[in-house]
Image (cartoon, rainbow, N blue to C red; front, side):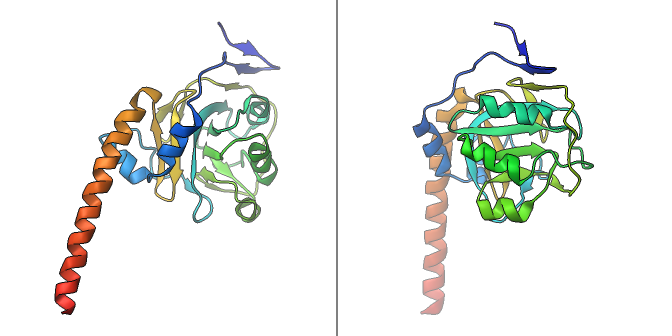
Length: 215
């Protein structure tokens, strides 16, 4: 099937999403440990960070491509959100306009999205934090976007130097963002479980050293 077009916004054919339990399993681990479990690859650059402390999101990628400073495709993506999706927006890293603010953020959540990752800028940080919607971006600006398009929904995009395909798994927390292709989920989970066990043993060793020093 080929892409369709909605008033100069391309929309890709439907894609598969993982089962909710897969998201739950990934959500139990940090991006740092998951990254170590995947050979420290598929990690977005450190310029994309949570806009409020403690933000964390796990979801199936709903990719959106926009023109710099324009969010027409982002608004159109509301019609394509499914529960468990994480909206991943390539806004070309543009710092002159905010691609989303509190209104779109809460609409994402109302439609079932787990949050948004934006390779670009956003606004309304205080309200978004109050709403508890996890949003990750390159920075903040009060300048609002244009709404002319063009754009694309459901096609691969680049986020922080990493290609994100529709249906990829995305985990984002205070350390940053990692992208996991569906066929590598079990590999990532096996690797991260070994890392967690090893770190627990190291923590126990340090606790023993402290106990001996205190005694």
